[in-house]
Image 1: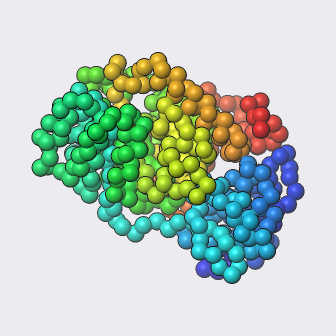
Image 2: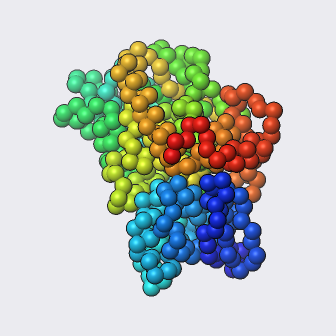
Image 3: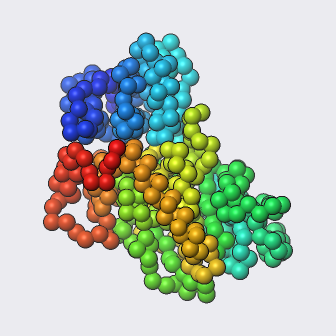
Length: 434
């Protein structure tokens, strides 16, 4: 142990109930915890040495081991392969390492490996507000909300997929008031490819999608960005959102928009993704709801599918937002704000109302669920429990994590700790065919 951080060697031990048992050898006698969790606090380890046996792990155990390594490594910390087959092991683990948020490190004499990325020190980073535009009916209200953001270092990128001249006319009326970059698609791209085009044009460190019928509260970007600047290991910031109708009137919540927590929290990423994916309900919000770092969505190994809206190779059609949130939440945690910082519009003209799009979305969610189960990440927590800490207490050395039940789920008679223990001790869950 040096400067308050560990240098760790990991040896792979026996298995218990199909859960990988990870033993950690450090410069102190440290006992491993059940379920493959490394016995170190978040960001407490400076370097990890990993042997050749890691290359023979099945995919689930690769995900579990490397996810734990990413969690305990300090920013800039290294995971190094130190035995003779280092190059082969690196190739075997490369896709999984990228999936959990580790980046390739330069090869050294000790072997190849990965590093945990360091957060930017820029306190006024550029935020790209991306508007994949098509329907001019609500576009003016949407664009006005982007321009009214209290955080001013933004660029607004509009990719116009419409056939008429109404949207460019609205853009022209605002052009002198903000940093707007407007692009007219010569051929209609439709929703998914228009999202991809917006993302490819973004120059900001952070991304804020804004659908052309949704509305941002004026402090939305500022509040969410502040969480990234204060809280380590964040890959997503989101909030509750209002649901509005065609006349911008607030209407009743859907199951996915009901408040699932009652205060500002940092939610451990895998537990939030698990709740979203296993229930098939988008508690994190539509694309307009959240803020994230561009590099985290772009992170991938050479073996990965180049498409941005997929999870472990499964293209999640009809549910772009779920694909994005899933990829981000296996790399870090989410800041969840109790205040409603955006407005999600429900109306008869949106594509989500079309039966064929609904059918596609259901199929996309089912595919995402299959990949999530294949990864084994569901084994950490029952889907109705979130691992949380209060946002104001979140800091580099915080240990104040606790299990919080989803407010929208019927309360159990067991304690959360008892439920997690029973969940992890189940050798094969009913839905688990892997």
